[in-house]
Length: 289
Image (cartoon, rainbow, N blue to C red):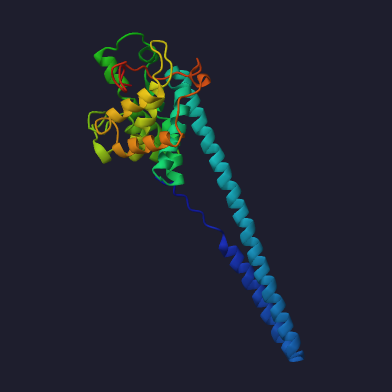
């Protein structure tokens, strides 16, 4: 899941410059050797020192330039992610504030599972953009009140694949796209779109499933009140192995025991938050988006 980017410093110019300085130094050394061996040694040492200083200085300048370029790329990359997340929110209020909370919780769970820093970043991006495929779903389906028809359900269930395709075309987001593709898979194999089971599901998607469900259950919705933290925790434990990876559930339990996860504040459940609606009788589905 790590980003792989290689940069090549223009060492050819640096080596050429150093070689010229050394050549000049040798020429001066030969000339001064005829006059005085001591003078030749002094001139040679000075030229070698100058070549070394120039080489180090050039390398530092190139490193600074590349570091600045990398920082610019990262800023542009984060801007793309922010713009896409904003577009999702405009298209579907259901995911606006919810995605931010899920991303934060997924980060906590990933770190509790000792996932590497770069992979944690990939998981954060994927959870923010999990529903990016909904940008290609008709607004009439996204905003429909009441039950969806079979054809509408079939269209809605395309959004993981659509999202994966979108991210595949964005630099450094292909790894996140794998998580997006699998974010509705279930540990027991009853999810979609590929019916993956167990560890065949990317770890980031397994982490997402727990984080997404917890935030959904502990948030107020127009059609129901939020669950308590304790009840949501019990529901997640109950669905271990069938819906959730038991290792992720264990990490969730450890994080709650340490106080890293707790009841969201009242401000976190206000009108600004919009999440997927869930039935009272099950952890994560009523409209299995």
